[in-house]
Length: 86
Image (cartoon, rainbow, N blue to C red; front, side, top):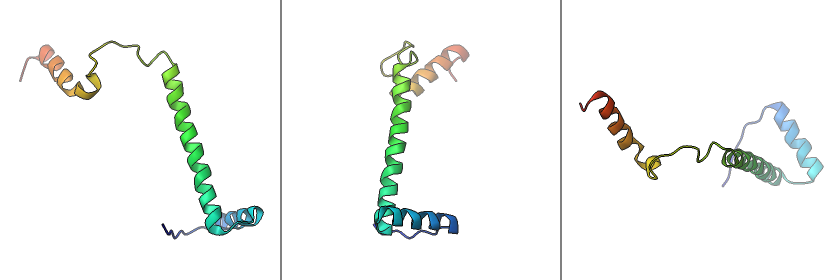
């Protein structure tokens, strides 16, 4: 994939400095930056999921096993039971 990007002067200078310090082409510098940002985001997302799974929150409630996929039917039944079928 080819990309074209507009950078302000500040970011263009940062890119130039990175390119020089890593002795890489602009394309290689951008590829490495994308890889680094991707790793950071995946790690952050994984940390959030791991934190949630290790908490007492997950699995603390009871209900039908298919609740996640059929919640609308269960909600409709519950509301009909409280307010009468429409």
